[in-house]
Length: 222
Image 1 (tube, rainbow, N blue to C red):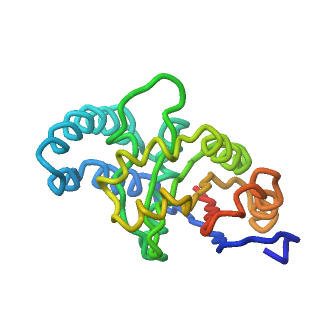
Image 2 (tube, rainbow, N blue to C red):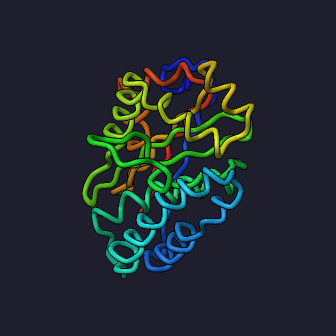
């Protein structure tokens, strides 16, 4: 961070993901979303509750959004593309552990329900992710400011009651103590990658996140 005139108490990762085949990526996401094996690892009561929440959501996402994707990214599909691609990059390259997409296990509430996706990092930190998509801009600041707002509203803390079912006890213990990670994922439009990431890192909201032990900024280029 010193190259940007910043000081961080933790580690900051910058990741650039490039999607080469949109239709194939949509099929991969369908397969990932439709895999409900995570439910079978839960207790009997949790299985009943999460199965009821997840099945209608899975059917809706697959039939109304993912199966309609061909070669163009719609606004509705774009956010899922960003969140799932960011999550997969963390799992593949930084050894994060998969946590089901938040929409699968959250109860529907009024207003913005909270973070879009989660992982558990290799250092047993729950990573709270926010994804933003735009077909003509780089919405990094929107994603970053959303994270800052969610932290202020305690939405990460609110999610722990569910996340304890998908995370290790150590990760939950760390989260209770305030040790968490955050992921700002956004679509990338344009070729000036260094400038795009530099603008995100130099934003006021990003400065507020540097106190956390792990921070990830992920640009997804379509």
